[in-house]
Length: 287
Image (tube, rainbow, N blue to C red):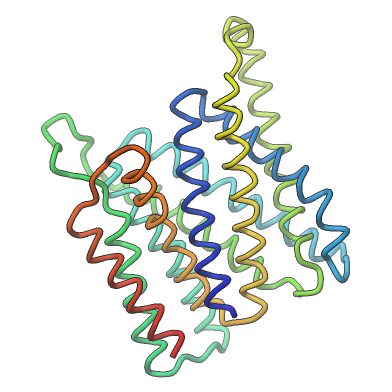
């Protein structure tokens, strides 16, 4: 069950990222992030009292702390993706977000058998391969790979990894309240940043509002990302954090497949290898 939920989280993360990317093509990124997180918060406010078996302020606080790390990781990721090079930023962030929880799990007493060790290692390789962007068009205008690129990409992954670790520290009975706590903090943060930017630029504040199609993409990004976090949270209560984190970090597969189907973008050969490696890793861990 943990493996299924982790793969479900990966699929939901992938579709959410694609939806967020489509929305960002039509609206400023801060509007997209703020809107999607507020919608996710609203959905959790309705669902959490119904589905949670218990509520504790401790787990709500842990969830809020996880949201702080997640928000830091998201802002760093968007900053680096905008500056490039994406083909370096994406895999570094993804593999760090998987490796940090896996290392934490091992250091705190988690045990893996032989097949799980091989599956986890293969999964980390798959995360890198499926995250690789198209580099065939790279030229002299591409952003250089500097120490800042590497450090900020790794810090973004560290933020996501820390968020996953904190989710694992909560009680399974309180789900999805920890995700509510995370969304409460991130929604407040991103809305405050958005309002500050609009006050600093009154002309932009009076500009065109997002069209209906953009709002649909924002809604899809917010609701699916929230569902992915809840799925990950429940998965960690049913299985080892190291395995769940690696499988959930395969989300670039969903994004790449949707870009291929919807936008006609071709997958690279290395990404097909990554998909095959991900399937093999899932089988090894399941066995």
